[in-house]
Each structure stands twice: as C-alpha cells, then as structure tokens.
Amino acid sequence: MKSIKIGSGAGYSDDRLEPALDIIRDGDVDYIVFECLAERTIAIAQQRKMKDSKQGYDSLLEYRMAQVLPLCVENNVKIVTNMGAANPKAAAEMVKQIAEKQGLQHLKIAAVTGDDVFSEIERYQNETLLENGKQIKELGSSIVSANAYIGAAGIVQALKAGADIVITGRAADPSLFLGPMMYEFGWSFENAELLGKVTIGGHLMECGAQITGGYFADPGYKEVPELWNVGFPIMEVTENGEYHITKLANAGGLVSLATVKEQLLYEIHDPANYLTPDVIADFSSVQVEEVAKDVVKVFGGSGKPKTGLLKTSIGYKDGYIAEAEISYGGAGSVERAKLAKTIMEKRLAAQDIEPIEMRYDFIGLNSLYANEVFDTQEVSETRLRIAARTEDEAVANAIVREAMSLYTNGPAGGGGIRSNIKEIVSIGSILIPEPDTDINVSYWEV
Image (cartoon, rainbow, N blue to C red; front, top):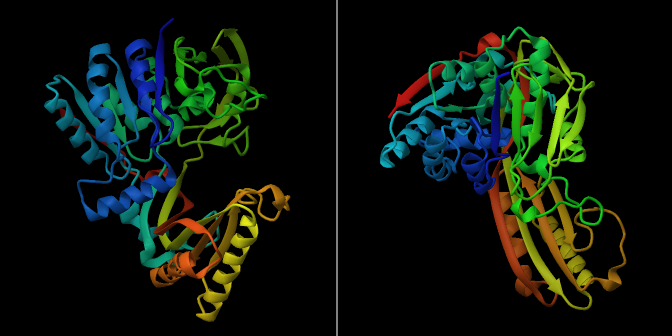
C-alpha cells in the first residue's frame, strides 16, 4: 500500500530551522511543510506590502530557503508553505532568485493566490465581526487587510503541475498537510469522511514541536527528554487514510499518547465540528495507540461536507499601545513600586490624559495573577509595568514621557527603564461564500 511521509518544518513564523534541516536530511520524508502564518501576522505583512509591492511575505523566507533548498534538492523533498503571507508571488520570485544564486536547476515554484479579498471589501460593509459585533462599515479606512482561509485545492493543482515548492498565502493550517495527501493518493474532495480523518492529522502536525513535547513539558510532572534539542514531528500516512506520528530517533522530545492527546484538543471549540475550508472534521471518535517508542498510531475520526463559507480575517488599525517598565530592588521594593504607580495616576489625571485602557502590573508580585494578594515581605525585587491603549499617538507619547520621568522624580532606586510605543493592528472575522475567492496558481522555473 502506498504511503508518504510529511515532516513539519515550522509551527509558527519565528520557529527554529535546525529541526527542519534534520528532518530533510535524515527523515526520508517526501514533503516538508512550513506553517508560518497567524491571523495578525498576515495583517502586518499586508502593511509591509502596502509600503513596498515587493514585500509582504514572511520575514524569514530568505533565511529559511537559503538553507532548505539545496537539502531538499539533494534529498528529493518537496516544500509546502504559507510563508507567502500577503504576497505569495513576490515570495516565489524571491525563492527563484535564491535557487539561481545557488546554482540549483530544474525547480518549479508555485504561488497560490486568491485568499486576499481586500479589494472586494466594499461588498461586505454590512457584515458583522464575529468577535465584537462591529460592522465592517464602522471600521472605515482603518482596514488594512482581508484574507480568507482557503483550502488545499490550490496546493493540489500546483503539485499536479509538477511544482517542487508551493507557496500560499492564508491557506488553512491543516490544508497545508492535506494538499500533498490529496495529490499523492488521488483522493476526491467529495470524500468528506476520509478528508475529516486526515485533516485531524494535519491539525496534529501544524504546530510543530507542540506534539513532540514542546508544549507539554512540566518538570516534576510531565518530563520530556532533551527538550533543548526537541525534534519536529513526522507523519507517515497510507492511501487508506491511516497514519502515525513520530520524530527522528536521535532528536530530543517525545511522541506519546499524552502529547498526542494534548495536541488533539489544542484550539478545538467543538470536537465534533472542526470547521475547515475543505471539510468539517469530527474528532469525537478518534483513537490513539502507542505502537513503538515515539510512534503513535492515530485512527478513527470522521468528517462531513464543508460549509461553503470561509472564515475571513479582517485586519484594521486600532490605536496604539504605550508601554514602560521600571525596576525597584532591595527592602521595600513593593512599596516603592506602588508609590511610582500612584505618581503616574496623579500625573496623568492632572493633565487630563485618559487612555482607552490602562493597567499596572507588579512583575514578581502579581503580573500573572492580577488582584491576587501575596506576601510582600519576601519580595526583594519588583518591576512596575505601565501599559495603556490610546486612540492617538500623542497620548501614548505623553504616558511614556511620564513613565520616563520616574527616574529622578519618583521613588528611590528606580532603574532599568525601557519604553515602547506601537500601533495596534486588531483582527476580526467574518464568513464569506467560497465562490467569492478566486484561486489561481502561478509558476516560476529555474
């Protein structure tokens, strides 16, 4: 029975590269998948593209591809990734240039587009954001991006055309893994039960080392060997849709019933109805079996036909975050940090500075637990964090100036001040009909 092996190359945009290189070199895999796109990431990428039409792809694309391409050619491994972010075509052009510079030949690079529906935003003016109830028309000119989660169809099309490297924008995470399986086994998009089963496998793989111990380790409770050298997961799937999850034998981390079960539940709202652009996956009957050390078989699960609606992320400018921190050490550090907070409150009130939101955290005392009360007698260092959300940059600047003034105008012994102001890009979601997207695949060859 035919089978293929798919390695995970990244679980998020800033992930490590070395485990991916190890898998390409030693994993005997057919595909390596780099999942590098979050909802906010693509909105920020869209802003970069607006400033420079040649930008907008993942900022680590060049770094990754320069090291990955020669190894993939040497080991006959195809690449699937959503590192195209807001600009898959520019990403493909960049990869072509890297390949040419390295003297690589006979490579076909595909860019899958169609997820970007920003130019059609006018037709959705009366739609309501699922998260906060705001209508699109209320956001006005603050909108910077609109990207629909597309499925595996464009990836399959690219692989059928002989692509060695497939670069997408906002393709759904499990779809990056589903695409190679659909192509290799010739599965039909109408077979919802099968698609549901293997989409669960894509979900298990999409976060990289989370399933090999990275999001599992808890010393004294859940031990993970050699976490410093944690390996990324490998999925071996057969044409009947059965699969197991494993890792390289010489890599750190582990694959166990517990790590698989934890990842199975990660970011799942309704286990019986996991919505993707390709299928509604049903996790409720999934079973797992440890068949060898670091090898877990996953079977069961099902699926139902897709909804025909695509979750679409709307990115919009939403004010500013002003942030500053200052440390106090030694006896009385908590009381001096509290006095600094009081000074900030009175100074801002005296100047009628009213941010939308304001919060103070005493790092080392309550920054993780808000209003919980702890014994302050044993605390020998306290760092006051001041954070505000404002509508305009001038108010953010005024708050940071007051925080910086604590150096010589606040309690004794303050030090290590840092401050930062950044513009906020918020994300909301609407649902749009799938026919509103127009999937296209473009090709570059070297």
